[in-house]
Length: 404
Image (cartoon, rainbow, N blue to C red):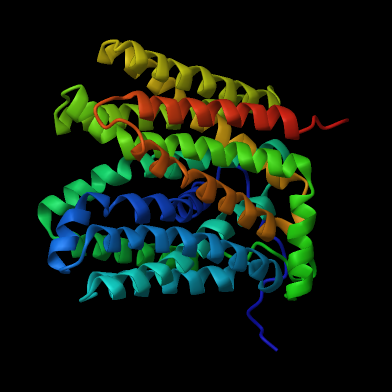
């Protein structure tokens, strides 16, 4: 028998910076891996003598691998504990990133991205499960808010970071940077992240019990409501990320530097909202804060659409855009905490479904934006507003208030 398993829960306090940095870094895997290399796709097609549709499969493969990986890694961590699957996933991510960097053909790059996604999925799903292991109630919500300092900026700044990397090196350098990021997190987790799931709380890894566990979660209206609300918010954010470069630079005439400033301001809005949420949660209920965030998102999305339809000046468009993007900082910590709160003994599986819904639903935004008129900001505004309003309706319809 192994003598290395940790059987006692970790004793820590809310706001521990060490855990916030490690778990926040793990939560940032997907946006960094998806967005950093997107500016290089045309150059990659030339270098690999491949077509654009083939290179776009690298994104599709990653999204599919991310969904499947979370569904596998979550229940596995409920059985084996968090530490071993986490370290294995980080090793897999770092090695796959190196393979992507040296891939001689597009087909091998697609395969490498699939494997890379499995490692990223393990990191993301186990990070949320670790938070559920360590914290409960408002302490969990406060910690999720703290994670926004690390992970909240990732989907906003990843394209900017990727663009700067491409100024210094080729697209292969982006995957080298991702490999280094994975390796650093591996070292940090191995040294400073102990086991958070005691042996007595682990569940046997059986396919039947895993499927039944997912069935229990999917029959929980509140869980589905919170998870779908978060996923729909992600879809609005994805619409912004995929379309804003063209809208703000080509239609409104911003320079790359000015566009980076707008991107950074919106990212700062997410962080500020997340920190405000962390300070007032407990005095204000999580559900109330989530309602405020979803309402702000809907108002902001409708404002972006109205400004685009009316052809209003850029300054008018940027105000509701900032409101909608910043509301992520209120929605995500509270939705995650409320979704996981009632499933402490199934936290890995619950975290997996939460992540899958976010990225599967969120992934719908990019093709929807691309279907519209390229010479208008209306498609971006319409998709953002639609997902924000639907998120609010889903939340109001499916979730229920807790009774004392």
